[in-house]
Length: 272
Ligand SMILES: Nc1ncnc2c1ncn2[C@@H]1O[C@H](COP(=O)(O)OP(=O)(O)OP(=O)(O)O)[C@@H](O)[C@H]1O
Image 1 (cartoon, rainbow, N blue to C red):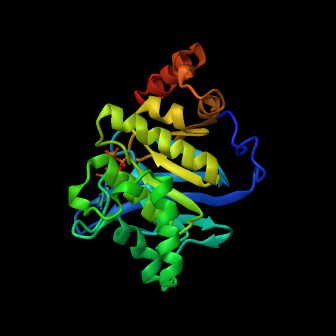
Image 2: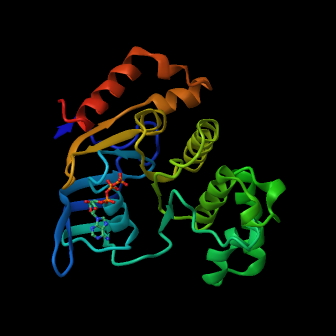
């Protein structure tokens, strides 16, 4: 594995504080007549405040790894811990955002965002205050009372991000969240998630098929091999911080960006 550095995010007060530890994790999907090894021997530590982008060829096991972190499925072998405690199932410590947000179409955005905390019996007044805060964070104040079916794809994704963040999760797990959006909306959503990440210092685990997206957002990029997925590269990158600091994404036209882009594509296409 090409492992340039796995040291957490510089410039954060919580540098190198481990959040998630993935140790010797493999998963085999088993049925009566088949056995599909999806991921093999994954070892990773994820640190507080990192924006981790995960790439790899289709079917290499990216979603499988995310589903294990979410607690939707259990690994066949190995252990996954959050703050040193084994992940045993779904809970509010991990917020998940999918490509197709699982929102209640006939509820208003406000009701959708409030749903999780209300189920957890957070007092109604606190929930209402929080919903307003998160509506503002994702730029949906003016649409709070619209029904989900009245929204565009980008707006739905904004609502899904707010629904995940309102539970104050330790980590946001995002599975190709912007994959179905048009190019312009996608760019706006990238800006939004970068700003949210920067302001909240949340840890984000983000699957994407788009090399530019990985480099423009991530502080760390992990590349997986073709099925069964193993980690074949893991490196830090600071283009996203440069974009925040200079308030322009001009860095995407730089030589270092071009080089990293080429390198990742070669890895995914198995030419390195
Ligand atoms: N529930 C399941 N039962 C059986 N096999 C599965 C199941 N889910 C995924 N697989 C298989 O496991 C492998 C990894 O799938 P996974 O969806 O994790 O890959 P991925 O990298 O996220 O793919 P993509 O980039 O196309 O979304 C694939 O071969 C897939 O067919």
